[in-house]
Image 1 (cartoon, rainbow, N blue to C red):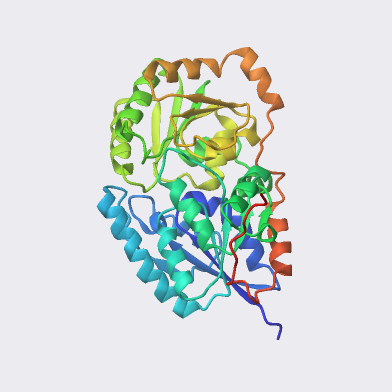
Image 2 (image 1 turned 30 degrees about the vertical axis):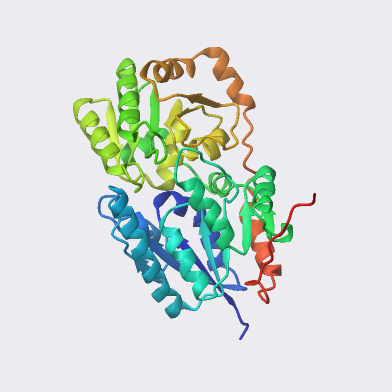
Length: 388
């Protein structure tokens, strides 16, 4: 019987699962690897839609469900969830004995998993390192996870250089492109009619998709920023507004309550706790633009040649396509930006949009690298000094 390396993939939210889904499937179908899957974070939360059920509906067996009591409220609750993730992941690693743990991004629950891996001598492969988001604690978490990790899969050459600048050996840092582009290219999207039926809504002549997350490092509170956005949308009541729920960061529930109250008072607005990747991408294909401060607006929306109105500093520092309009969290300027995406000269330029986050072949590149990877000595890594 051929020995297969055990690759343990951690997913903590609907957003990272969407990016990891095709990699998970490819590992599961591989003769070289044995898939292990851990679901944690908002996947297990009733408030966030119990999205682990979507994973199981896709046919994947979840080896461990780690409930870290995500509430998305205060800093103390976030700290408690992070501490719980440390002890819970330690227990999971003892049971599963993985050869490599795969994690993506910058979520706080991954910090606990990374520390547990370090203590148990389990190497980590990290995705989407080297990126920068000045307006959120994700910035520090992402770079910390880079230092905990042993193999790096990044989305652009600029990010590859940044990971190397953090002291990682260049031979262990691979520019494979963004996983989001892969997901889009592999997916058969819903038609307009199918999407309307699935969501239970009727789209209008003009439609917008809105995803707004907490801004954890901004002096202006997330509640004030989302209120500016909601006030700006008063100038656009003829449009259908599709809101997705904010993520489980500190301040997330306050944003959710404001959106929920807005939707209750406006018959042109709808709020969904979880669209799932298929409906989310299908929405992007059907709407006129995406508004908010989600990384998806920069990493994935440009592939659809649709405009993104990126509000505030949460994504400041990330590469962006020309289809992205950066806008401060001020009502008048947000409203003006929405009017702008409907101007004929702007829409003509969208056809030439190029997504800087890869060619859609990331999963194939990753599996090829993992197949050649020597696990001997992987845990020991030297600090790489840049040439003077």
